[in-house]
Length: 308
Figure 1 (cartoon, one colour):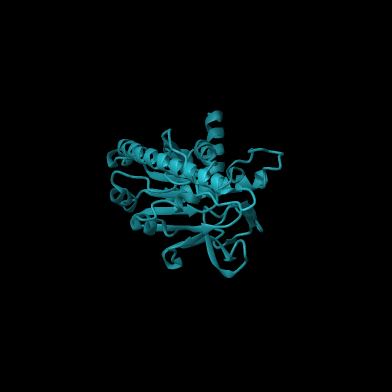
Figure 2 (cartoon, helix red, strand yellow; figure 1 turned 90 degrees about the horizontal axis):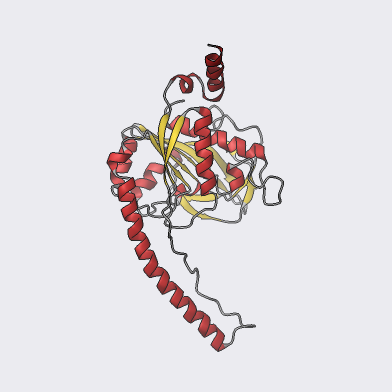
C-alpha cells in the first residue's frame, strides 16, 4: 500500500492525476527525411521516449529512416581564379556532373524504397491504432500512402505534434501546411533568442522561467495566419538582423476535433538533451535550458492529447 501511494505521488508530480490513473496514450514518432537530415534526430527519438516513460503520459512507436539514403553532391563547383586552371576546373565540373548523375539515379531508387516503406508502415489501418503523431525533425515529401486520410485522422480527434523541421515537410501538400498552421521559409545563423511567452498558463509554456533564453537555429515561417492559431512563443524582431516584425516560434491550433502543437525549436542536440557534450565548447545551452525545452514539448504533447 505504501509503495502504491508513493508511485501515485510521483506520477502526480509529473503529470497530474490523469497520468496516474489513465492508461498512457499511444504516439507514433516519425523521423523519416527525404530532404536535409538533422544530426539531432536520434537524440530527439530518445528524449521523446524518455519523457513519455517518466511522465507516464504516453508510449511511443517509431517509423525510423530506412538505410541507404544517397548523399547529394551539393552545389556545382565554383572556379577559384587563383588556384584553378582551365584543365583543373574542367575536371572538377566533369567530376561533379558524374556525381550528380549517379546521385539522381540512386535517389530515384531511394524514393521508390521510401514509398514502399511508408506504404507498409503508415497505412491508415496501422495509423488508426494511435492517439497521435509526432514529426520530430522530418523533412521533404514523406510519401504517405494516403496523405489526405492522414489529415482526416487528425480532424477526427487525434493529436499532431511537430518539432523544428516538421514545418519543412510536405511543402507542396497544402493540406499538411494548413493543418500545421505555417511552414518553414528560411533561416540564418544560429543565434540566442529570448522569446515572448504569450500565455504562461498554457501547459506548453508554463515551464518557462522569466527571461528564458535559448541558442538554436531559428526559423522564419511563412503561410502563417495568427488568426488561425493560438500563439505561444514569438519574437517582435527578426532573430538575426533585428528587423521589426512578428516572427512566430511556437503555437497550437485545433484541426476539427484534433489538436496541433508546433515548436520550431529543436535543431541542436543541446536543446533536447541536458547531458549532450557536457562541459565542452560544443555545448551552447545549459542543462536547465534543455530541461525546460523537454517540459515545453511534454506540455504541448499532453495538451494535444487532451490530457491537459
